[in-house]
Image (cartoon, rainbow, N blue to C red; front, top):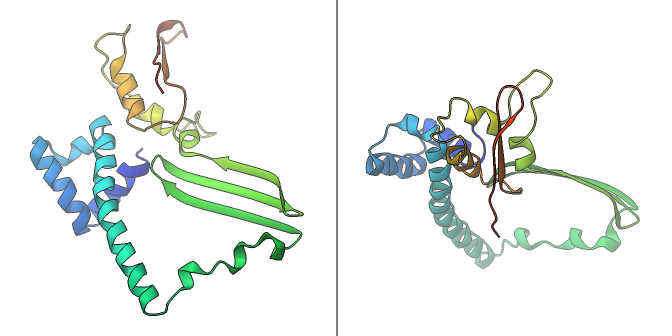
Length: 192
C-alpha cells in the first residue's frame, strides 16, 4: 500500500505522463535499479524528491499563467468577497480534502455565530499509522514492514528508516515486540 508522494508518482508514471516518466526513469538509470525498487523505503524517499522537482516546475508555470491572466483582466483568483465573516450565515459547515506531502488530509468545520463550534481533522499520519480496520487490513506502516529484514533486533534501524520514509508527523520512537508481546527493542530518537 503506497500513499502520498509515491502513490502520486506511481500513478503518473503508470499513466505515461512524460514529466513523471522523465524524473523517475533518470533516477532508476542513475541508481541502476529496476522500477520495482520504487515499492520500498528508497521509492518513498525518492518520490519526495521527484515531487519537489515537479512542483518547482509546475509552480513556475502556474505563476506565469496567473500573471498572464491578471494582465488580461481575469482577476477571479483574487475574489475575496466571500472571505468577510460578517457576510456569513449564522451557521455554516465546511469540509476540505487534499492530498498532502504525507498522504490524504481531511478537515471538517462547524461554525456557529461566526465562531468555530467544532473542528475535526484526519491527517495523513493518522491514516498511515492506523490500527487494522474491521476487515483486518493493515495500515500503510504495518504493511510496509512485512518481511523487512532486520540485521540487529536490538537496533532495528531498517524499521526506523522504513517508517521515516513516510515522513510521519509524530514522536520518533519504534518499539519492536515478539509474537508473545515481549519487548525486543525500544528505540527513541530525539530530534527537533
